[in-house]
Length: 329
Image (tube, rainbow, N blue to C red):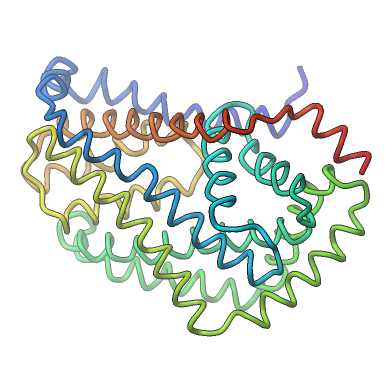
């Protein structure tokens, strides 16, 4: 069997589950971890479900602001539905379905593929930037206990490396990223030249409308997403009876988000638990509590993705039929 990039990415994502099994079998006592899960406060678990529509709503609002900048006509309600469908389908194999779903639905609405791709690329960029900013907080919070006083330096050096890289190769990175996204999106519209031409106009409109006020709005929404996920972690920890503070929960979630930038897991399984196993002893909590909470967060994440099935059922799509339709348009 020929080794392909898709096979390599699939094998890479198996590292997280393998790490989870190692933690369960070699690091913690599974019975103690299970006992913690058996004593859950279901009222707090139910309260954490409020973040399902809230997080998607904030995502949709940020995407809507970007979409308006590039000249798209779709409303906020429509983008909420499309984002939720992509959230649901993106959790299922094969990979890349989330982007495909968003392109499918918006192309059916008459949105140009080039504008869609630019809006998706910029939306993802704000995700990465907010993750980096939030990670700095985590590094500073744990700088003495976990990083032996080097947390500040790690944050500064890491930020300097990223900033230098953007100054040196920022334009090249942007062009390559957009080119790759264009080639992906072009399968839904006959010619890549048409997509590239439309994306150029969308990019010009984006830079023209991206003032400081708009940029700050997008950044605040992005940070709000990270804080919301941290709040969900805090509620689920409390549901297990774990005595953690909000700043500690935010710092843990910041490091989890940083680690999960690397695609070596499925739904965060394994990497999330590894971060918590390192940080929980600093708050006087056991590794069993870390693994139990990590697994509970995994189940919460699965339920979050699957909740998008209702948006999909409201307007299901056949990918094979849509590919033929878009390819012939």
